Image 1 (cartoon, rainbow, N blue to C red):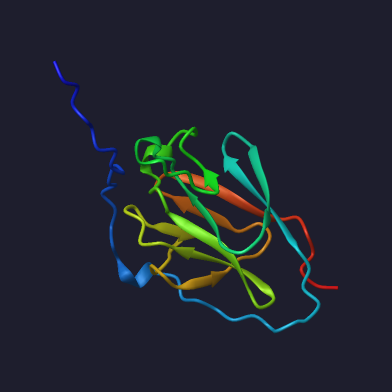
Image 2: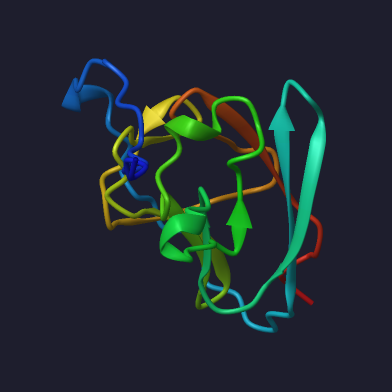
Length: 147
């Protein structure tokens, strides 16, 4: 009997899509002398840290072995990982700041409690909190961006 192929879909949350609570991108002063950036994602409430050097765009999401897809940072092993999209968001350097971009994720992303608009870059700072589905992640910038 042939086995059925089950398509792995992101479970969809039922959340209020109130656009009044959507975050607005903000700008920060421009500085020069940027160095390589090291970031830690602290998975709450487990206090597990995922540490990486930001090089180019780093995709955060959920692995899908059936299609041979593995994001740079895989959250599928953590509680709530099934509510994270395969390519949920990405971090990148934008001039002299670290930004986060929601990549049209199924369940959206919150930055400090406010919904992000898909495909818009939002600057992040040390201590910011991201919510991906129901997963809460605290951002730690481990390298000072400025000389």
